[in-house]
Image (cartoon, rainbow, N blue to C red; front, side, top):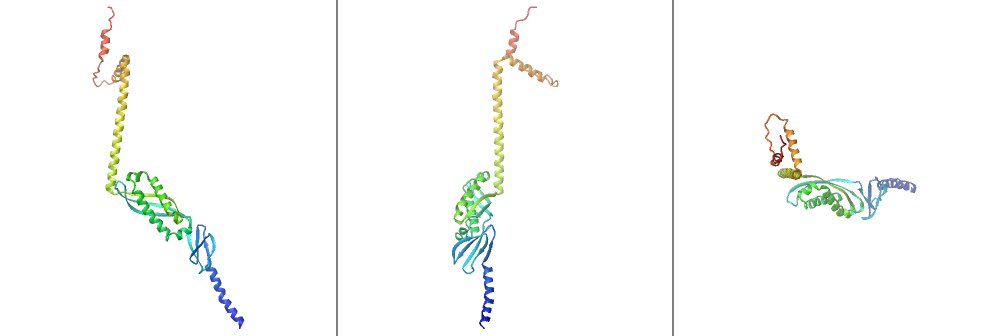
Length: 256
């Protein structure tokens, strides 16, 4: 009778032991860690590989250590010069301290997303529209540094932030186009005026040089006459300097 009782007890306990063993086994991949709590208190971080968790006594929360790519929803931002734009971005971060990511914040993914949205609005709101369009790299770095500092207590490392799009309304796009066109016209006028100035300086220098050498002036007139002599379709009236005439008239004539 005793033998039958022990055999029956062993038949019951063996499946229970096997079920308990199977339930206590966890396998974590290389990029996973397990935050283990024992009787509700943090015990240790385990993994990767085979992990034993005692059912009823211990609980484990899996944490992924890979880089997370998160899109930040388009945010309405008012720039410092009172221009309303919509801005969206993408952030790259990863968990570096699994126990902090589980203990210090309820949902670190949601918390990081909300913090990224508010930080994006605050940082871009301090800059004018031209700075948003022309200095994205600096703005990306500013947002990344602020996010990284604030998420450090959650065991999260923000590695990069990229502003994807800055959307303007149609009226602002037309205004920017008009501004760009006006800027191009201004630059063209400045370049033209600078060219006229340089040409005038060159002409003044040439005139001063020719004035110092009257013979050079005569050669220049002769060269010009040679250039225009080939065109026989029109009559050319060419001015002759009075000083040149004076020299010719004052020149003594040879005796006949």
